[in-house]
Length: 185
Image (cartoon, rainbow, N blue to C red; front, side, top):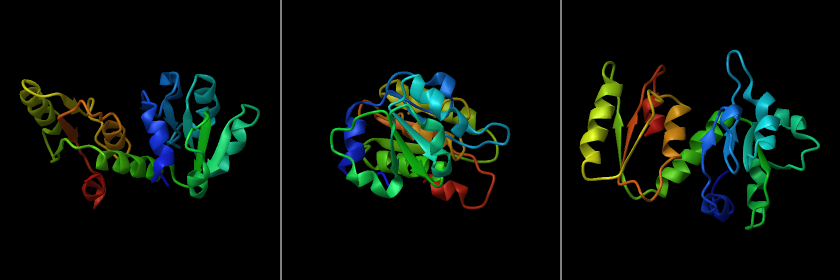
């Protein structure tokens, strides 16, 4: 759903940040709503728009919460119908926000010319990631995943922080189900 030049025009505007916490939204950010065990991020999409989000990626069944805000709501299949010059705020209504985030990160990663180093294993991932990043940073500009953002949400969010200024990205990748590392790669 993120292919083509339409999202490119949003990306060209240098999206400052992708976030899953509406309290962290700043002007121009992209807010991705996730339903967690205790909190449904879709309930905070309205707050994200009010705080200045340029785009919210929201569960298609929850878009009514954005009524009255002047938000253009797009279904994933209609993304290519958007004019090249995007007028924000926008809401992208999808059936799977986690899948949409991963697809977006994959698209963004494909545009990155630098090297990505993935660190995985059962023990010592965070320490190893930090050491590799520190050694590379002596001569290069390095992006590293923050803390232990090593899951299906954290890895894509880290990838979406890549810019042309980064020579390397060092990402920690954890797993709790078979095949998860493959999907990150």
